[in-house]
Length: 182
Image (cartoon, rainbow, N blue to C red; front, side, top):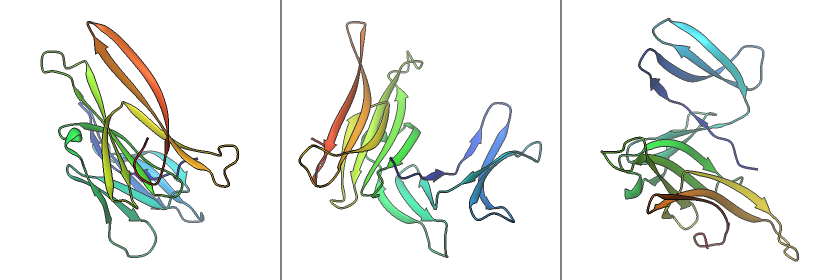
């Protein structure tokens, strides 16, 4: 199971401006994610969240910001070049918070903006090293290989390629070792 993080963002659509905030609601012990319509000046939704960490993704870096105490955001890593000019669509970490993955999409070409290319950055906190890969989606899982004393961390990711007009999609599951994915 992945370690959940809460991503906070300001999203502007053609019609509305939305703001998501994390808040402590009186009488509860957990934080709540609240979504507000800025133009209508009203709360749209509220959801009780068990997460204790905010993930902040900027144009150049990714930060973790603990929601408890007075700590400042902690820079986790710089974004790799393959994610430049990408729309970020997902960010995850494994249960130990030792492996992080950032996913983005970008148009394949200006002539065909409806076709997108997926890009992924896999980051090892211990090694302080990134690996850039092509992928549209990714998730972590734990798996115990028979005969091993400890669980292994797996990353699964979806890829899509096109050759002579033929689109091929693949789902890969890779065991992560001390270094980067094999």
